[in-house]
Image (tube, rainbow, N blue to C red; front, side):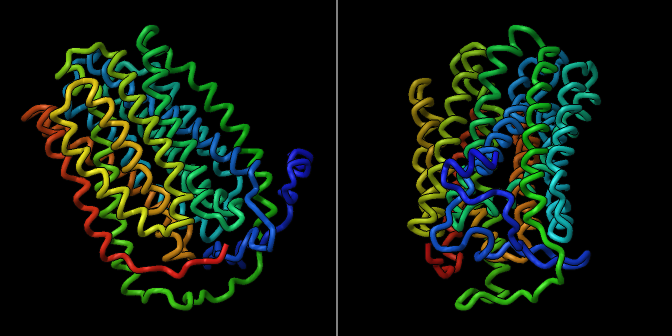
Length: 428
């Protein structure tokens, strides 16, 4: 890896970088001047590529859960509320544990925790492939959620360490891998799981093993970046918002993430059933349409970070959430082809806010980087899980079409962005 980095004009990746001065009771501080703030330094592309590819593998495996819902529903005669509970078991586990993991790694970074967490996903997939009882399916989904809880906070920190100061770009590269991984789940389910059945999910455990190997190598790069000196006091950024405004801004960012993630969750969990119910398409065809939507999400997630670096994250947040509103309102009334086109537009626009929201929150509270990353990744998963369960219950009592009419108004919550403070721009 070192020889490749040198030939690409990248500084040696094992060069010690002071992330913070750490004790067992004080946080790791990832400040805006570490790791590659020297003039002429740039992102560590090899590490960014590795962590993004690992995110791709991680989210590919996770997305299989939602993609096999039609199979599980037919095989075990589940209703929509039970389908929602499977999503809840997966996402609620991740939601609860991610902030805890982030808080712990702020105090004591764990370079090899990523590969250990991936082992939980490995076990979850094997269990899901062999599960024949509803309770076992819930446990398998929870194990995959546990792997997600360990993966996201520390991998987000590694992406920032490798950013060379281009935080939005690095977060977008990281999100790109995850978004494309999520989009691959329905496609792989249509090509492999539907024809060969539930047992074929075990084949994807080989992906988890590959991810374990890659993450172990990244852990070897990450370990020398950590030093163990006494922690310096955290100073408020000149010109930055007060602690009260920071608290308000974090609450607003959570609400904005709610509007975005709940809408995406509604399409991810129930779009297949919506297309089958309204247009009479086959399960495999519906999974292809879901793949198209999720692929558009991946592209939008990548574009949002660099746009935030260039024009400001607050502007991107405004445009990406409110800008999707006209198209989400039109989606429930469109035909099959129109639904596909509108889902692409909505995916491109609404997902571009993810990187900006996360980096905005990290810059508001830089001395709690891991915990903030865990909270926001966890909130995203938790909102998706709770929303999926609630929407499933609503669909059982009304209809899938009614659920999409209600969810179409969620981007209007983007109006709350007016309460976000303007942060000082960092020179690039």
